[in-house]
Image (cartoon, rainbow, N blue to C red; front, side, top):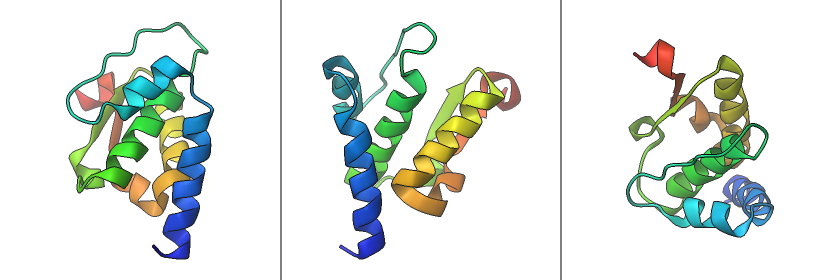
Length: 103
């Protein structure tokens, strides 16, 4: 594994370790959908970002094969910035959008 990939992996691992048990279960569920229902400020954006990173780091899925929808532009920006710490510039190939702009 090259040095850059090791740095991304370490960044992902640190974020993963900060999740609680139920959040980790959602992240570890790679196959199929996961529905996250939680109030504001509970870590939904972080959970989804870590899950996307997990899928991309542990499978042969490509960034352009992932669609992530959120409600706000701020959520889109936060997810993309966080994801870039896990996978680098490839984060810009993940389809992250608001429901309104996607539809």
